[in-house]
Structure formats: structure tokens, C-alpha cells
Amino acid sequence: MIYIVYGIHVVICLFLILVVLLQQGKGADLSVFGGGSTQAAFGARGAATILHKMTVAGFVGFILTTITIGFMQTSGSQASVMSAVEEEVTEPVPAPVTDSDVVIEEAVDSAASELAIEELATAIAEEEAAPQETPPPPDEE
Image (cartoon, rainbow, N blue to C red; front, side):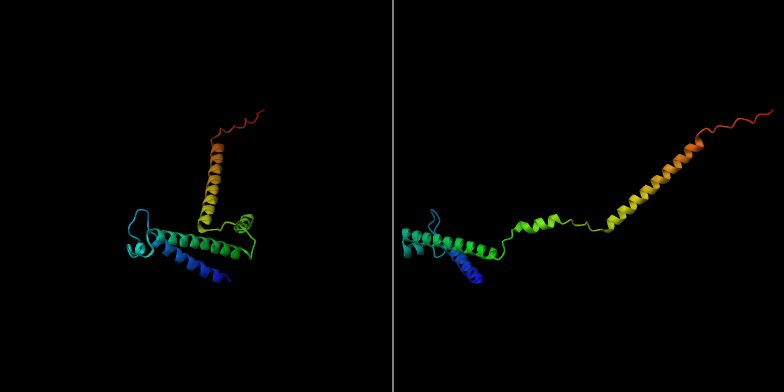
């Protein structure tokens, strides 16, 4: 059934294109097809009235088929477009591990170990530089 409505919709679209192209612009003496021959066939007033009525009829048909297609597409499911987005947002998605993540983690570990080594070396140097108290000489009695 929906394919029939699609077919009617396409025919109405093509009809509207042709009718709009046939219409005479404001102040224009030549139309798209045939020059002034449309004025001779329909008369100056008659052509505008008939083409105008055909355009309005085509527009009404276009709107009706568009609304019909919209209702036929959504009649099977009452879900919103945003319902799928809400489901995706509620589920946490783990970040993929890439090679750059591994390289960054190794660099952080390396920097942390170098910092620990430097702190240890600084502590040892401070101990060695600190004046050591010499023990008092043994009492000689």
C-alpha cells in the first residue's frame, strides 16, 4: 500500500514541477515552454487562472501524500527517534585502548621511576653532605 502512495507522490511532484515551470512570471511576456503560445491558447487571464488552480491542487495533493507517508511509516512503531539515543547514552562505553595510550602509560611509569630515583639520590647526597658528629673520645682514666 505504501508503494502506491510513493508512486502517487512522485507523480504529483513531477506534475508540480511542470505546472510551476509553465506559469508566467510577473511582468514576463515569455513563458518557459512555447514563448507566447500559451497566451494564445488560454488567453492572458485564463492561463494564469487554470495554472494557478492546477498548482494549488498539486500542492494539496503533495501535502496529503506527504502526511500519509509519514503516518504509514510511523504506524508500526510508536518509538521516538530520541529513544535510541537515550539508550546509548545510559550505557557506559569503555574507551578503546590504542597504541598511543600504551606509549603514554609507559612514559608516565618511566617518568615516575626516574623521579623516584632522583629523590633517592638527593636524599643520599644530603645524608653524605650533612656534618657527621664525631663521637666523643673515650675517656681515659
